[in-house]
Length: 229
Image (cartoon, rainbow, N blue to C red; front, side):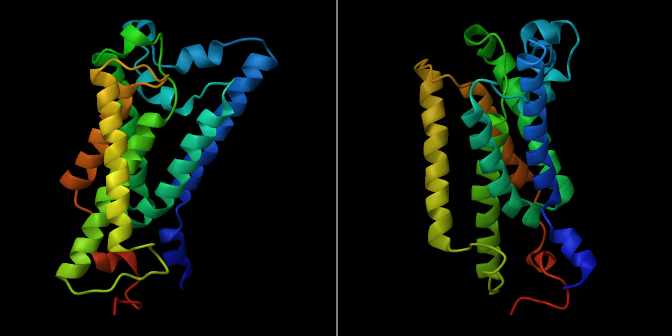
């Protein structure tokens, strides 16, 4: 395998984003436990007060923050983003993976801000909206690859994708269960400590992202010297 192809397929954007989540968390706990200040979190978390004062960057930056007292919040989001991102980046490419992250974050923030989030929570932090955008993109983007493989009568390289039709049907069912759960919590005003509007907005963005912006042809997943057989 040539070096340029290796760099092209290496999911370095996913790795960089996941690493950045932990770096931001270390900055948060440094401000909180060393300086005794919550300024960093307050300045970058998404709040109605911040938006009304022109801090529009909060629609993105909130996604990189997590509760300092709940490390599992960060770990759960980081593990899902890393696991799904590694697969998605091979299909979408580096730029589109980054845009999926940014779009999922902004969509989640907008969903929280305009659809009742501020009535229930004083502010929003966490990459859960991004997680839901990744979940929907993963379920339906890789389904598209399977459909194309059947249509074009091409085999999927199992060494590059954990690709089984039954596997992805199961994934889709699980993801849709999550989405339905979030919708029910929103409709019946069930509080779980999470922002259901942010989750649903991220999920909608992830689904539309892979449906309205078609993925690369199957041949693009391998170098020209390694065609599907």
